[in-house]
Image (cartoon, rainbow, N blue to C red; front, side, top):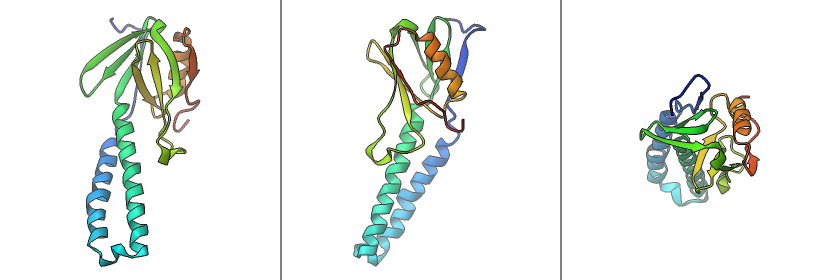
Length: 164
C-alpha cells in the first residue's frame, strides 16, 4: 500500500520514555541503596518507607511498559489501518473489515485511576494493537477510526486524550 494524500499518520510521543527510565533506575538502585543501608529499615518507620519504595517502583515500571507498548505509528487510509513499529521496523496492514473491537484495556490493579490508560484495537485474527491517550490528535484519531471501522462490533475507547 502506498501512503497517499488521504492517509493520516498518528504517532505516540516517546519523549518521556528516557526520563521515566532514568527515574526508575534512580529510585530502584540509589534510593533502594539508601533505604536498605539504614539500620532502622526493620523498624515500623522503615517498613513504611520500604512499602512506599515498592509502590513507586511498580508505578514507574508500569509507565515504562505502557510507553514501550505504544511505540507504533498508526496510519489511517480509506482502505486499511497500517501499524508501523518504529523500534523493530515492522509494518502490519489491517483491512477495516478485520477490526472487531476498539476497547479500553484493563489497568493494573494498583493504578485504576492513573492518567496513562490504554485502548486496544482487536482484529478478527486475535491481534491486539494498543494505543494510548497520549497519541497525537487523539480525538481526531478516534473520530476517523470510528468512521473507517464501521463493521466494528464494539467501539468503546476512552473519550478524550491527555491534555484535551
